Image (cartoon, rainbow, N blue to C red; front, top):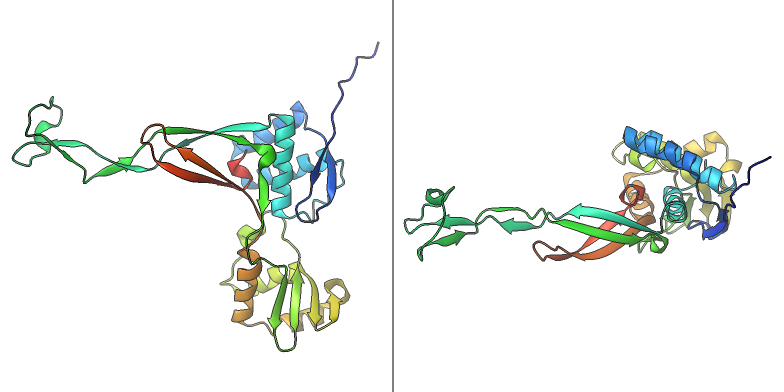
Length: 270
């Protein structure tokens, strides 16, 4: 007799870069094992590959893994994690707030005279010159369903390179891993990376899709770029890229300091 099968629920999410509704299922125990093995290996590329495979399988192959932006992949993974393991994730942080190192000082000003000895007497003072990290443990409980992709102010995929002639480019978002290879100090490498991400080139109302331009024409266009153009592209697009981010206020139970911890990128939520 065939054994019964457990029902697998289906959920929906909104893909941040496209605003499209994507259906997905939770990942299974054997799929989670692959993910945990990649994490234990401490190999970033292995981790990325495991995430891509997991998101592809759980979204029923409806998401193009060759075009998915970094922040889309991270957001989808966190949503999968919330629906597959637990909606809330407990993360612990060690407080690094500097606190004074208390040293007893005798009347002569010798702090070392009392080290290792019991301190008593009205002539004792405290030396607050030296500091150390508090070391208190701060637990965070994050509702993963409330973690969102943040779009920094001033970000744009459309970049005007010549204001007079209204010449510019429209970029697509890079896939995960590419941002780490970005090098604005190497113009040849930076130009090559930008060329891969150009969706279209416009001049006034005339728009040319990158796929419709010849390799020679694209190279000729890129050869006219100057350092200010690269700087504007970096500041307007790359430096303000949408990112998976969550700010969580906290108070250290040991030293009492109040601050906000920023969780950013999938590694902070894993």
